[in-house]
Every structure is written in C-alpha cells, then in structure tokens.
Length: 457
Image 1: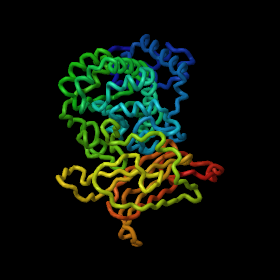
Image 2: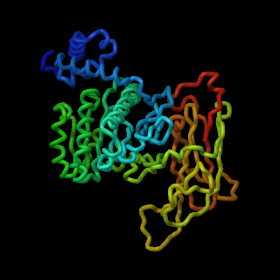
Image 3: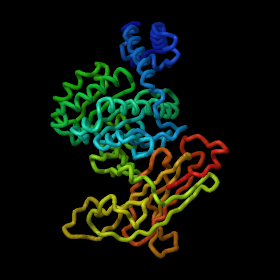
Image 4: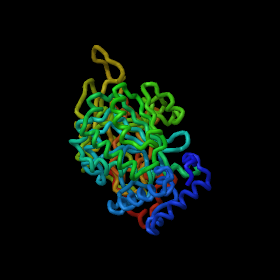
C-alpha cells in the first residue's frame, strides 16, 4: 500500500485495497472473526504496514479468545447487566450511576470511591460518544492500594467493550453512518504535583495505555486534556513517551481556557463545569458523579439490600404510588445513614438552602433533600415521577412537581435519586409505572414473560 494514502481520508478504493491486503495475511479463523472495520483499524494503527498490522491483529485475536472477552457481562438493551460507569443521554441504556447491584463486584465499587468520576456524556457534533473523566479528582495514592494493575485493566476492558458493543451501535444508528470512535475529555481541575509524580499510579497508567493501544487501536477520535496546570507539562513529557505518535497527534492539551471544546461538542451536550450548559440535574452527581468530589453519595451495599417497602407491579397492573410524610428539618448536617421517618427505602439529608449562601446566623431552610432507593428484579425499566403536597391539602393545584417523569432501569442495579422538596409539612408521592413499549430499547417481553410480576422494592 502506498505511503501517500491519507489514512484519515482514504478513498473507498484505497480503504478496500488496504483491507484486502491485510486479510491476505490472516488465517481463515481470524478473518471470519474480524469485520472490515476491525481490519481497517489495525491497518491504520500500523500506518498500512500489513506485516506489522498482521502481527498486531493476531495477538489481539489470541488475547480475546484466551481472556473470554466476548463473554464479558456488558450492559446492552437485551440484557440486565449493570453499566460499568455513569451514563447520560443514550437510549440503549437509561441514565445511570454505578451502585452496588448484584452484578457489580466490590472491586469496582472500591475503584469508584478513588477515581475522580467518569461518564459517557451524550455526543459530539458529529454523533460520536463523549467520555468525560475528572482525573484531577482521582485519589491517586489510594488507587494502587484499591486495585491491582490487572484489576484496573480488566475494568478498562469492560469500559471499552461497553463503548464498542452498546454505545457505538446506537450512535451509528442515529447518525445513519458508521460511528466507530469516541471523543475523550480529561479534566485535570484539582490535580496536584504530588498526584502527577506518584510512581505506583503512573506505572499502572503506563501499563493501561500500552494495553489500550494494542487492543483497542483507533477507538479514540480526539482527546482534550483541559484545566491542565503548568506542572502537568513535566508529567506529559513522560506520558507522551509511552504513546504512539499517531495517538499523540490526537491529543490537545488545554489550560483553563478550553472554549474550543464547544467546537467539538455542542453546549447542550457539554457539562456546565466545562463551559457548556448541561447540568443533568435529574441525576445525583449531575453530569459526572464523583465520590471524591462529594457530589455523589457513597452508599454501602447494605443500603440497597432488604428494603422494607416491597410491592409487585406488572404489565397488566403497571402503576404503583408510595406516599410518605415530610416534616420540616432545621439547619446542620445529619448522617447519610439516618433513616427518614423509619422507612428503610428512604434516606434523608439536611442541607442549608440556598446552597451558595453562608448566613452568619441560622435561617429557616427552604428545601430539604431526600434520597430514594429502589430496584426491580426484572422488566424493561420503570418510569418515576414525584409530587409533593402540603399536609392536609386535597387539591392537586397545591402540589409541586418535585421530579418529572424519567426512565430508569433498576433491573440492572439499584437506583438512587436525590429529591429536593419544600421544607414544610407535607406528603411526597412517588409514582412508579412500568416502561411503555416505546420507551427505551429493551426488547418486548414474550407473552409468558409479561405475565410474571415484577418485584419493586
């Protein structure tokens, strides 16, 4: 293949010729496993050098078979597997955070507590999925204590498989063309020199980057490193030595002025803390939940087990409402584990309101925050709506919509919602209903499955 081919803008004949030349170097077994897109990605990764690309793709194939990668429990519309990290703005899976579900092991939960927060957050202007990592909030020194290098790589493989099998097909369908790469935004706000020079964590990063380049080549369209402090330059000199030149060419290092993100990602798809207008206020943690940052509660596995409020819903009896009283609360924090009115399915937390004020003397709170936990054992998902009414009022006109209708998939893992209700005596009315067949992408149940009740707790 001629070295004059522009691999980013090949003609159809040039691409077809490169694919054919590499396929000629592969066994029938490997050829039958690989799509033309797989062949092209590895060709590009080795600048159309068929000998090097063949070595690379054969090693990739052997790894996938030996590691049983195709058998990983990846969240997709036709299963109930949990998402590997937070997700916003897709229909293949509903918006979700990582919680302690049956399919989420303790190692992943420990990682979630130390990593600064990651989320696939909507799409760029060309329909590519966008992954945002709050790397500046990583608790770097705890990552090697929390996970081994192999454990971190296994987690990263699960993320890549979720991207490949679930998000990219949805993006391709919406764009009406093949979307096969993602855009990555790495936010370094809050990073310290100590974090950037922590050798054990850097060794883990080096190994993960090496695996990523060998096993998932050309899955990244562009990476933006934003809010990079001056001290990052020293670390970057070392990190870039671990990267292929083509990968380096796709990385842009930006400081606090990162307005050019808006050239890649529309404002309504970009979190407000990165200069966009999106806040994802319907989800705890907003656009990118972060346990280290403190915008998302770190509840133990026991908080989601044996919830006492349990009921059955079904496709024939799809609705259920749960009512509880709210009473005014005063100022000052209370433990996250303290129950609200004795209901094991509810957690209360008291916060000053408005949150951005700092009064010198106690003032009445205008709102109170309530956390609601729920899960189901099967189904296509549930739609949740929450109303609040003053105590003693029977008029719907007196009610306040606390949480508008939103689809969740608690069959994958428990859902945790944060509600903001008036700080007055009243009633919270939580309305659940089974998702309609035109909501979400989960497959329709077979007639016999539709008769099986769904346990909601």
